[in-house]
Length: 281
Ligand SMILES: O=C1O[C@H](COP(=O)(O)O)[C@@H](O)[C@H](O)[C@H]1O
Image (cartoon, rainbow, N blue to C red; front, top):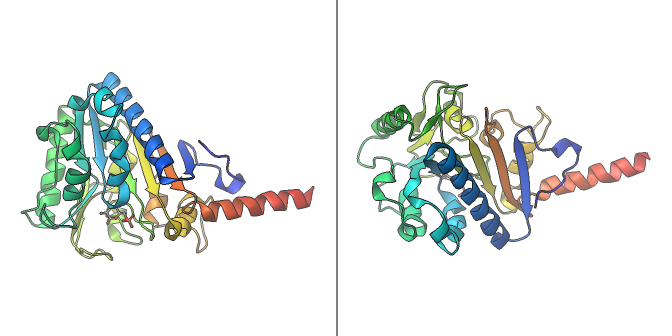
């Protein structure tokens, strides 16, 4: 399923770009990918600590709720976290927890005590502090691993869905939260997309994960995908502070799951590069 890209879109070190012809193909491959990461984590560490996001991602977990995965996965070892949450009540339509509960958690046998949702009754500042505290406790007892390079939590898998502006989790382009080095979890009060108040993992935590997957579907994501994976380090197409571009695993591996529409800018450039090569010979 991996696709060969033209020179300037060679996936960066420790990253892979998968392009699919249909949503169903993404669902199928993503389920198999998560299943494999889960099996390896449980075998190597005894746990599987996964951080989810909002957006369309949850609907792409549907195959995990069906055969064979519903029976084959060791759900008792799964620990659920969120890479970001909106500061709304858990029963609000904008809540990433509500989305995940309805679309995934209610359909699989994950223990409720293993689900670490973000406090919806505190201020965003306190909720971020609380969440970081909880994660620190779980790192101490190694339910979540620790990165030897960064001392940050090392989630077995962080699943991200990229917005059309290139944001991931609740890290938005040019936002000062992108510069945080020491915090694991932070909050923002000025999200460019509603709701304005959100809690989010910081880049050091995201980049310390063993595995990171970024999903992007639809033509509205094509420019951001291009900017995020392009090799060129300057120019309007590759803004240095595009959050998705700043996802660069320290020791882990990044996999992009794209549909053809989201990959269309890459394909156009690949074709150009191909034609250019043939003109030169
Ligand atoms: O606000 C959020 O959006 C992104 C995904 O953006 P979308 O445009 O694809 O809906 C998601 O990753 C994040 O968790 C969520 O809070």
